[in-house]
Image 1 (spheres, rainbow, N blue to C red):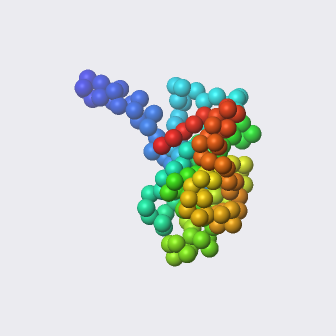
Image 2: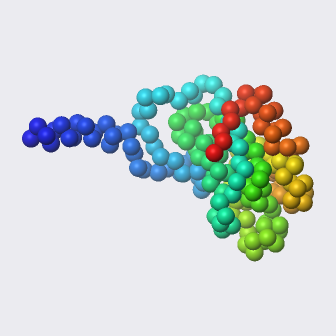
Length: 178
C-alpha cells in the first residue's frame, strides 16, 4: 500500500502540470492551438508589453499545409490572451525571408507555383487583423522576382530581413528564431 501511495504522490504533480486539453479559444480561434497550463510556477507578466519578432526563414516542403512557424504567432497570441495578458500588451511581428516567402504569396501566385490556394492566406489575414506586422525581406523578394503585388495584401516589404530584425529589436522586440 505504501508503494501505491508513493507512486501516486510522485505522479500527481506531473498529472496536474501536464494538461493535455488543447484550447483554441483566443483572438485567432481557427489557428494557434495551445495547451492549458494550470498554475505555472513561473508567472506570466500581464502588466507589461510582450513584444516579440519571429524570424521565419524556412518552409516545410508541403504546399498543402500551413507554415507552422507562421502559425506560432497565432499560438503566441492565443496562449497569452488565455493567460489574461491584455491584447493591447501583445506586440507581434513576423519577418519572412528565404523559402518562407512562398508561404506569403497571394493566391494567384501560389496557384501558379503549386496549383492550389495558399493555405496560409486566412491565417495571414487573421494575424494582420489583430495587428501583427508581417514583413518580407526585400532582398529575398528581389532575388526571387517577387513584387509587392505578388504577396498577401497586408505584407510590408523591408530593405532586408536583417534590417527589419534589427529595427524591431531596437524598439524592444525580443527575437524568437527557430
